[in-house]
Amino acid sequence: MSLLDAPIWHDAGTWIVLGVSLLFIVVGLVLHQVIRKVLRRPPEH
Image (cartoon, rainbow, N blue to C red):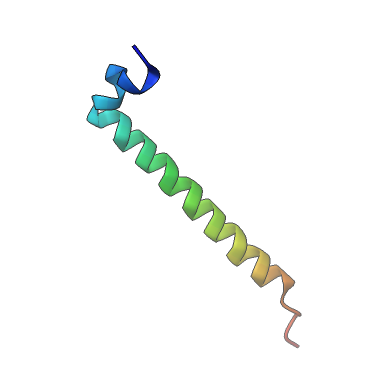
């Protein structure tokens, strides 16, 4: 039995957890870029 044939991959909960984790990673990267862009901007006086 290979790792890809394991029963965990046929469970809907596994895919939900992986999807939510991926979503958090993407949102974190986007927020990181936005915050860096805001902090790099020269102050407006």
